[in-house]
Every structure is written in C-alpha cells, then in structure tokens.
Image (cartoon, rainbow, N blue to C red; front, side, top):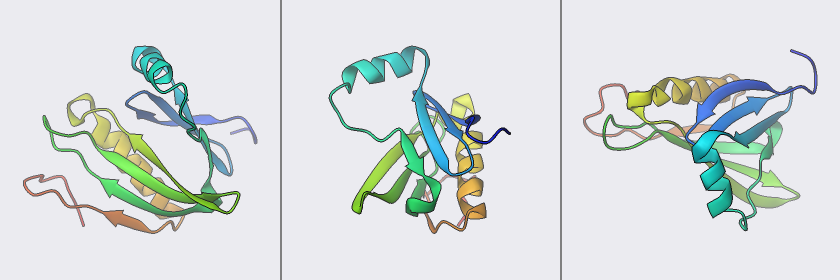
Length: 126
C-alpha cells in the first residue's frame, strides 16, 4: 500500500470504508450513496476519521432479515467529542463479513470495543 493512497477496506450500506496509515475515509458510492448524499447534504458528517483519535467502538451485529450490522465510533476531533455511525450491508448481502472485518481491525488497533449481544443470533460472540 502506498502511503497516502487509501485502500478499500470494507463495504458500508451507502459506500465503502477506505483507510491509509492513520485515517479511515468513508466514501459514498452507488445509488444508495448518491441518495444518502442528497438527503443528508446539509448535515456535517466527518468523512475522515483519525484512527488514533478513536476512543471506543460500540458494535452491533445484524440479525438476518431483521437488522443490519452497525458500528458507532466515538472519537475526538479538535478537542470535541464526536461519534460516527457506520452501517453495513444486510446480513443477507454479506454485511456480517464486512462487520467482522471492521471489528477485527479495531481490535488489532487496540481500540476498546463494546460488542452487543442480540438474543437469537447464533453468529454473535461476546
């Protein structure tokens, strides 16, 4: 990987997560991404998140046919506490694989993880 050139890491519901040596970059792509950008054009959402500024991650696995997996990152930017929701594709679309990849990456970076257990979901681990 070239320093400074983001590589695709995993899929989100509305695009992809890319990363380089120190940042996550959340990029909207495809029809869902265009719709989300249009609907949320006035909201101030961070697309770049410094990995070293992430303080904690709340991880919620999806349940097939009911909910999508998602992760809420808690981080600081310019000494202001912020959070960013990352929603993955549905479990039926393989979003559980992207979710587990992201959780593994956060774990490797020693970011504290709060993993939620959903009753009836056999894939959920504590």
